[in-house]
Image (cartoon, rainbow, N blue to C red; front, side, top):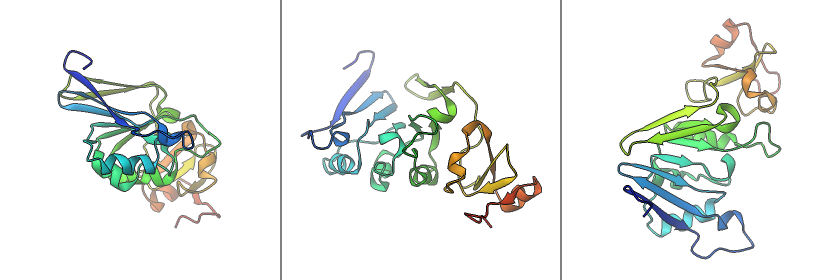
Length: 199
């Protein structure tokens, strides 16, 4: 009990192992009236399966995405159990691990989750009165790669790519420009990447 109607529940780990530090991450759920936050640390699929098997109440308004958006976390079953409206991914820009992985972004956006990323949005502050949430970000951004925005280009070139293309991953967030269709990209003067061939 944190006071003022706010509670924190420790969900994981039940039996932490030094052999798997990511899966020894502390996972907590903070609840205030009708709004809840799930903080997952670096927990991976093994941890997610354990939490689901314990019939833990995981449903949360906001999800702090596990392991910086790695493909080793945020399984479909876990995401379905949480059913978040908003997800926050904490990561550094142009990190050597390629986080967040496209598979994770795709799962989140396909589930209709609004995604915020520290590499794109900078500092992210989420406030709540227990009934609704307000999200404030340090930086504005270009649209996220959702079903509406399927291709990405750089403001410094005339080539567009699939978001999963290795060349797309090297585009700095502030230089990204998103297109919903091939026709839109070509109408803007962009041509398709010869590697990923987004036709």
